[in-house]
Length: 321
Image 1 (cartoon, one colour):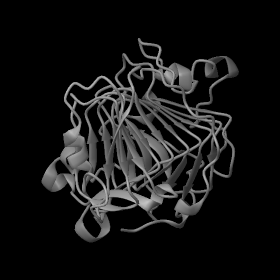
Image 2: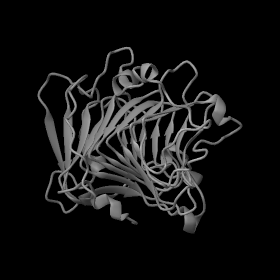
Image 3: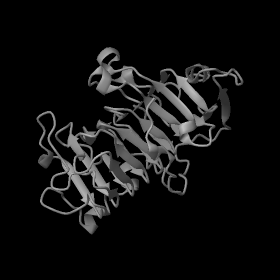
């Protein structure tokens, strides 16, 4: 498994989220350790032990180590937490190497979350399929299909299509690290990435986001007070529109020299970037500038592009409180 030196960079402290949508009942804890020192040896075995239709949060603690497996959390098992017990997120790794070319898109995901109210902290989701050695293919580290997902202090790493947020799911990701090559944050859901590190690792550059936001959906992806870096300068696109109405905003983030300055957005699948809803607001760094190819929100418009607005939905979900 290839790791980048950036994983050792301390993540910025942040006020932890509130517990919106949490059930009131007492929590249950299941334990996992590959060495046999816990109740379960694999993460999937612990997930299988979660009762169907559970109404209270169940925390699965995972001893530091590498767990090479595929994990599916089905839709009838909400309120599941995966928590790594290592000193850092890099100490506890769930990894597989299935590509979409043989397993299908969601089948390639190392962890596939179908349930609502998922929470992950202090661990790594990785797909170590090597597209350079084996040929270009989607190979997901994490697929989020369940609504109201929360990821804190995690690492999500792969090559192409690292993190999928789909099925109109909402996700809040904070103080985390996301790495990939092509379209590595993508889908039709709504997600906020707060105080995150986003790294384009391919020396030839690539595309960070590929949003497929429906035209009837106001919000797609918000990269907020985060840092974008990469292996080379002036080659990384902020995104491209998988869907014609794709919506992505980079707000108050630090964009390094890896970002293409003159035109950081490009076309995809017959969709033109100029027709998508791509915005920026008060970004800084060598990769940040203003020109006719980079639509900037006004202060008045920016009031409607906040984490709270992106995640509220019809139930008023606010994990940032």
